[in-house]
Length: 203
Image (cartoon, rainbow, N blue to C red; front, side, top):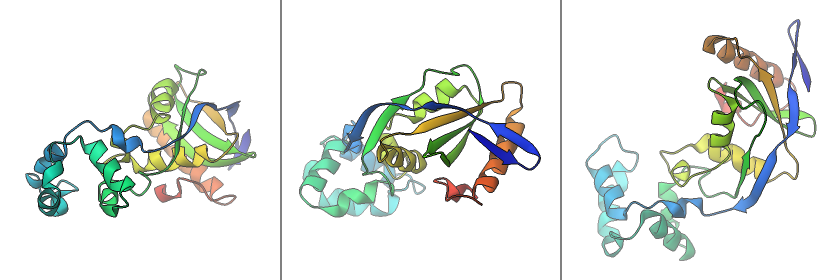
C-alpha cells in the first residue's frame, strides 16, 4: 500500500488483520466494582465525569448499591431503562471484535487500517506495535465508560462491521517520537483529501 506525501512515497507493509472474534456486545457488564463504589467516588470528586448525577443516582438506585456496576448497567439496559447510557461514552454500547497482530512486534512507527484499498484510519505507535495494536484490539469494560476510551470503542466497532480489514505498517524504528507524530499528522492531512478518515476528530 503506497501513498504519495509531498515528494515522498510512503509504503505500508499491508497484512490482513487477524480478527479472532466478532460481534462481542455488552462489554461494559464486566466492570466488577460495586455501584456504591462508583457513585461514592464520583460524589467525592467534583472532577469526576459522573459527579453531577451521582447523588440523584444513588438515591434512585439505593437497592442496587451493592450490585456489581457492570451487572447494574446491564440490568438497566435489559429493562429498557436508558439511564445506563449516562455511564457510557458515545460508542460504549456497540458490537466489537477482538484482534491481534503477529508481525513487526518489536517495531514502532505509523499504522493504518485499510478497507477496499482505502486508508480509513491512521495511528501512531511510539511504543512497539505489539504493545499498541494488541492492547488496542481488545475492548475492556473500562474502555466503554464515559471516562474510558471512546476512540478505541469507535474504531473497533467499525472494524467489526467489515468482513475483511487490513492493517498497514510503516516502520520508523530509528525515528524520534516527534518525527513519528509529525508524519502521522502529514499523512492524515493528505488522506483527508481522498477519504473521510475514522479519526477525522484529530484534525
